[in-house]
Length: 158
Image (cartoon, rainbow, N blue to C red):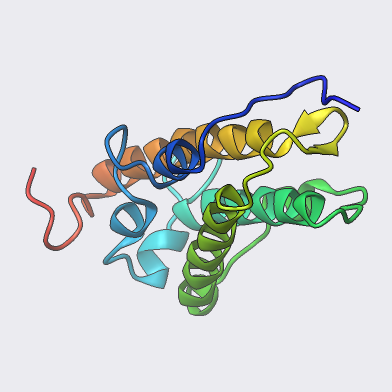
């Protein structure tokens, strides 16, 4: 059975999109040098903190990984979609995201990007969708960091 939303790219292209090699900064760079307090800081009139956005990204990243393993990710709540994170939890959240990112990149090497995963979506489509989702929210994180004066991260010259 062919996936309705089939997207087949070579593994190197998918990894390139996920890692943001040319299109945007690598996730580890965008998240680098932030303390838990900075990541959890709420800016006036903005709906989410940096930690809130990353928690959301981890939530969807883990759902997509579950689909890739053939698991039912189940229903979800808004609290799961944008989970609360404390400053003390920030380092573990970053590690979870980066580890999950590496797991998704490893899916690129599977060689079967046309395989249907979930609701007519192929592995390739899911990975490209994850790339877009990550780029979107990582861009928001850069903007939040600029607004709070924590951009650029240490070692990145602008």
